[in-house]
Amino acid sequence: MPGVGEATAEKLREAGYRTIESIAVASIAELHEAAEIGEGQAKKISAAAREIAEFGVFVTADKVLERREKVGLITTSSEQLDALLGGG
Image (cartoon, rainbow, N blue to C red):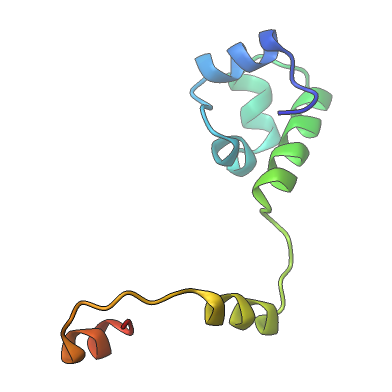
């Protein structure tokens, strides 16, 4: 992740933060305490992780619908099961 050096990355890993998403959902206080990093650094890391993971980004219902319409469907080869699952 940009702005995170090897020493800080190692502290995050040792504290159990192994993915961008796990950092993005952690509070600043949790990052600060668990990884033993400064509060300011925890705030920057949290913001960067949220941006990369696109957490907290407002998306309108129109955009969500547009994305959903582009998703391909996979059939189970059973029309009834496809209808039940909303696939096919």
